[in-house]
Image (tube, rainbow over all chains, first blue to last red; front, side, top):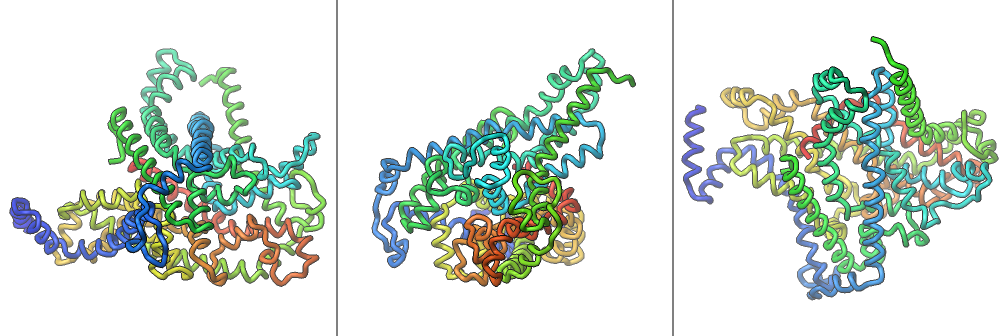
Length: 317
Length: 291
């Protein structure tokens, strides 16, 4: 049975593409039955919107539909690049990503290194359980807590006032938005981020530590010559991937926290697309902005993956 | 083994630092919990941090549960989670099983077709217009169908299906079983842990999601819990905060009501989480390895 299947496979390989497809459809009909709803899903909800993105090059009106709407060429892109807000949203997107990268990226690594030095497994596990927890709290609740704590009669201002400072509604201060955004991100995700580093730490051969100890290496030498080199591949991949995401700041947390007074520092590309598209209904213009962002992001991820493969022989595909 | 003085100082310092970080992580949640159990009047007058609840009162919890919108939101969210996760798991295991079979000739290009969607998308506006054209806005389908499969979870499940020995599939085929039988009778029972992981990820995703509901639902009767929370916590609409309660009461209850609402919406996750932690961690690792 197995042999006849094998021969069947070889024969179909030799055939031309249409007959190969036909053979495979017959042989694996149940698999294709399973894949039918799956591909229907990806085509409808992923590829149809990609096709729909051509409204970025049209003057779309819902009445005329995608095909019927007149072409506009690159007009919407020109409007965006020459517009008032291009510089602002680009700068805000990059600044928030950069802050997240500088402060948020090393935080899980440092926490993992500290956890790795803990000898008591109960203590270690308690710290892990508690620091993982905020990762699962919904973004609406997180933002609700931020809004409440930072309001002028909130707990943070109570503490500031106690030390003689002045009460301010922090979410109305453009100068504080990025700090609040990034620090609450760290609070929420630092524990969860340690998981991958802790796994890499557990994979380091204990004999390497022994060898280092025999050579007279203390804690710092062990850290420098065994631990950090052991973490380097993971660190580099994660860093490259994060840099690949530098232009994609999600809009959910932004639109929950920002308001017209803080647009100047808070409005990023994705939140701008949301506002112009779904609140002001400029479908074509906002599609153009979104398409510009998608293309840049795609290029960055491909580049990041290429770099990661060059440096580590590890990549996503 | 003798422990040197510097070693001891390091260990104590490290433990103190980690304890401080843990407290800093937990305190905002503890503060909300304390505040939610406090007497509303005492809480209004209070300034600064809380070491314990101010008095003890379940008045605000009663108000939260008396709010029909909260109960409705809870109900809608439960429907979305149960229906959504069922569809998610069915379609994801179909995809993962079929794409993990070596006999499938075109599995590489088919996989590429799916993975591509992880890195490129048509964007928010075309997606919005699509859902509108499908005519499923203002129904819970708009929240369930567009998130039916996540390519990321598909990859996690496919990885674990690939690890199932080929011999099992071959012997079942000899006995005349078709692929559906093999998937449901052999693969899913063997891969129960990964099914749990993926189901949890989907479940938390549905529980926490709010944006699609905001743009696709007009009918308040359909609002999931997170959207009600957004009104109460972010937009700050007093009427949705305590529908049915007298106005004076709302002002007094005001602050504590927010905290009790946060607790009511978070407690399910806080309770379930410690028991499921190992599954979450497992999923995070498979996911990280596979990209």
